[in-house]
Length: 169
Ligand SMILES: [Zn+2]
Image (cartoon, rainbow, N blue to C red; front, side, top):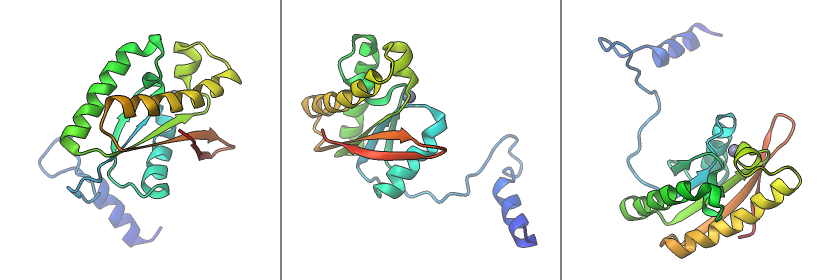
């Protein structure tokens, strides 16, 4: 690593002068909204992959995020996720009204612990239910919100990689 690179790293990681525990992000801030959002699982192991796919794959920088265990599963009518459903419907309503949300992207992912534990499903049925849930969740969103466009994707875990494939909804 060159001397110049070391200096850049130090600048990015240095705390804010005189503010104990504060940190200033080196990323630029853009106040413009893109009027698109995504609902996906809160599993932190693939959080950066969701960001990469939405921002670089779909070209949606600064998209609004609704992340919760199981993601779109809560909008598919499972009684075990009834409380989450109400919460997410409220959040979607807020994003439509205040952020002008017009497009939403739903993402389910392979091996989701929400399906395995809360819904007690096992493969191969687990993945079939997830794909059917994307269709149910899209229909539900069209029914209860004014969002114009709903797209859905299934994230498959390959060897050390994540692939996002479209699901017809
Ligand atoms: Zn998950």
